[in-house]
Image 1 (cartoon, rainbow, N blue to C red):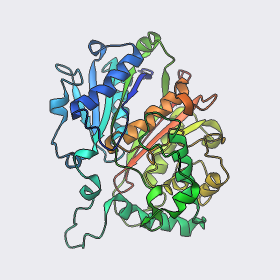
Image 2 (image 1 turned 180 degrees about the vertical axis):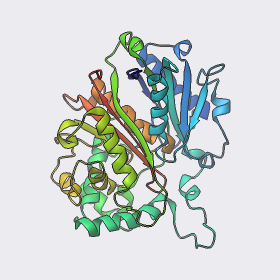
Image 3 (image 1 turned 90 degrees about the horizontal axis):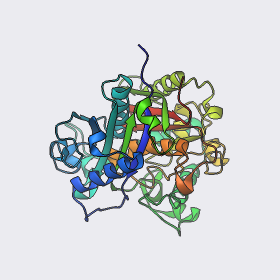
Length: 387
């Protein structure tokens, strides 16, 4: 039996800031969920199941918060499922929800991801000492910086590429009212002179710590026909993972990422992603990962990704805009960051991305990764319903 086509008919997100002290965790998730329902012109009673995701519980110090969030999410008496795949969790959560619709288990599903980083400290939560090893890493940047240096050596990229990405994404964020960082006075020179945190990653080339949530309503053909706004249709979605460490692991371009992208393109009938995809919302928590992922996802040959960035191809007015929303470099509620990439891709093909809308966007890719670059989730959405 063929799969049911899956449509994104509602998208909602909170304002993202360093600390949302005006709402509890329950209030935060309800805000995003309510906005997604309003966008879909639906109510809680129209939702058959809820699928949520977040980063590790010790990031906020609340164990299994989904149990007390059921009421806030309108999930009392309904199936409630939690997903976790480290930083990629927002993307994989959306894919689990989509699969429930595609398999006709449920007709309409609310999916949501969130993080309230202000109630803990994720950087030091990611700095736990490993047995028999000195705890020399400070946050995710300490882990990924050597991989960035390896990419620079491998590709012979000039050391200015990271600052170009950061400056581009922070300027894009000025067009996104939900973005955390709105640095109107930021210049390329300020990025390049910001303090070095993890060589070669500077302060302005790294993601912020954000509170926020994102929600989407996914439904079937019948539900899509009732939507007051054009839906985004799922053309392909996949998850892949690999161990954090193994002999021969390529930290610069992980095999799981390449395989995940290839599966999505196969499902969507994409043979030339560079030409056939109109916009990309890519998980870039440290600026150098834009050129790295451009290669990993098949948009550029090995060692060539940085040239797309340098030439302006990935700018808002380039022919392959990357992170029109400002991306993770501008907004990072960790558990929700991947879902924001998926949701922003859907907004683009729905024509509802506001000031950061890409004219004529018909197909967009949402991408997320997590852990030690070991978990990957991606989806490709389009304006047209797949056959």
